[in-house]
Structures are given as structure tokens and as C-alpha cells.
Amino acid sequence: MDRDGPLTRAAVLTGGRLTDLYIDHADRPSRLGHIFLGKVERIATGLDGAFVDLGTGKSGLLTVNDARGPKGRVERIGTLLRTGQPVLVQVKTDAVGGKGPSLTMDVTLPGRFLVHAPLGRDVAVSKRLGTGPARAELTRRIQSIVPGSGWIVRAGAATAPDTLLEAESDALHLAWRDVSDAAGRTGAPALLLPGPDAARRALIEHGAAGPSAIVVDGADLARDLADWCADRAPDLADRVVRHDMRPGERQRLFDLRDLDAEVAGLLDTRVPLSAGGSLVIERTEALTVVDVNAGERGNALDVNLEAAAEIARQLRLRNVGGIVVVDFVNMRSRGEAERLLAALSRAVEDDPAQTQVYGISKLGLVEMTRARRGTALADLLAEDKV
Image (cartoon, rainbow, N blue to C red):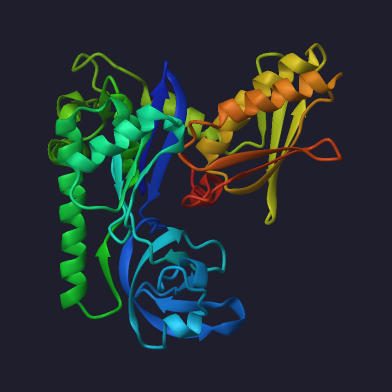
């Protein structure tokens, strides 16, 4: 993790290879996850939504599907909200182009093992933990530890000790209490709680696995993360280490110059594959298109299987969201196609952003979607030299 000019960067390396990248830009701040006390600016009947003034200069859109009404009743936005009404909202997706951020009233506070949904009524367990007695037992265990209801149990909770689960649930519960208290004494519009920054997003989404080291370049950033770990992730506090790139000070765990080169490469449209082929990744306003080229010597199935893993990695690193269409190299049989789809589905399983592989269209294109999370890397680094 480091700060480079206006950028704060957090890179996740697995086996020495970059697998995830989180970047904040001081001049283009993300508001993903921010909780606001907004004010309804106007009701947009045609959209069945409301534009909400957040005090940031760009209003957000709250649709009826993300508004909260009496459970079980079908409502129109005009029956739930009125102009000038204060409303507690969270940014669900960042502003894109001329569109403002999308909002939700279903507020969540994320942790490494648990997500607090304070307005919810249940304890929901991640689908990645499967079904059956083990899932039911985990649900009972969480209910005995956490205060009240409104919790989402992440996959890492299954192996986490009760002490960590209890500490995290207490911290998230206190954070929500602070938000509620601030909403009661603050006039709208106002920011009540910022969403996690790049470094904290990396730790929240990947810290449950227990990283061997959290390498930080810079004393201020290292101290900030150590304080956060002491409060929210005490098992990680002793893994925060300084890395200032001065020869002889500490063995270099990785070279930030290599990270610079990797990030710069993520702005290229062409990605080489070791099997002799390549990917060409092109973004449009409507979707992202990936073309897989076999090269001169590549075996079609081998190239496609390697491409599937690399496509999953590139979508995460580039923070691509929305519709993705992939034109793989033509295969010889239905069995090869099914093997490829299974490999692609496995490759996206661990993506923190919900990613769905739908199958092969009549034109032979693989269709998939990836949930939008923050700003795409290409937009974030536009006109910057990383």
C-alpha cells in the first residue's frame, strides 16, 4: 500500500502475482459506501425514483426498488417520499459520466467476516458456504455472538474464532449507533460516515484469509492502518510493516516499481497470454468486449482455458462493471465449450463483485455481467501517468 501523488493504492498479491487493485484518486474521490443524510430534491415519476441532494454538487438517484416501505407492499416512490424530506441513504454505485450516483436506503456496514445490515431483520449466510447442517450451525453460532439481527455472514466467518467475530460485530454496531446519533442531530444534506478507503477495502475484502504481511510505504499510512487494525482487526495488527524503499533498511518484500509497471499495463487494450495468444479488451458505453486470439501456435482449448483465468483477473484489476461479452477461439465440440464455461465460472467465484456467467449465445459469444463497484480503472487514471 502506498501513496503516489494524488493516488492511494492498495495491491493484493497472491504468490507474488497481482490479483486485486484498489485505488483512490484525491482529485476524483469515490463516494462508494458513503452514508448521507440526504434531502429529497424532486420526485421523478417517470423513473419511479427520487433525486436526492447529498450536498456534494451532484444529486443521487434513489429508485423505488432501493427505497424502504412497509414490508410486503408494492409502493410507488411518490407514496414513500416527498420533496424536502430528509432521508438516510448510502451510495450504491459511483457517479458515471453525466449520471449521478445511485443510492439505497438498505444501509450496510462491511467487515472482514460480517456485514451489518442494521435495518434488516435476519442473519443471512453467504451462499459460498453451501447448504446443510454446517450452514445452519454457523447461523446459530453467529446469532449467539452478534447483537440483535440484521447481519450478513461472509465466507471467512466459518473459520474465524468467536473473539474476532464478537469484536467486529461490536465495532460495526457502534459505527451504526454513531450514524444514527449523527442523523438525529444533523441537518440535511450531510455526510454521516465515509465508505472505506482503498487500503481498508483491500483489508475488508481480503483480510479474512490472513495475509502474511501488510506492506506499507510511508509512516503516516502505516500508522493509520496499524490503528485501524488494532481496533477492527487485532489479529492483523502485527503484520503491518514499513517499506520505504531505502537500501538496507528492510528486506524488500516487493518492488513498487514493478507495481507501477503492472498498473500501467492495465491501461493497454492488449494482454498477452503465455500459451501464445492474447486478449483484446475494448470498453464501450454499453458493454465491454473481450476478443481472444489464439496466435500462430496456440491450441484453441488451451488458449481459451488460460484466457478464462486471465479475463477474470483483468476484470477485477480494471474494475470493469456491467455487461461483458467474450469472443473465445472457436472450439471443436460441445464438451470443450462446457469445460470452458465451467473454468470461467470457477475463475470468477472469488471475485468480491458479484459476477455471473450466463452461457454461450447463438452467435457463439460468452455473455456475463459484473456488478459495478466504484470507478473503472481507465476512468480513474485518465490523463494520469502511473
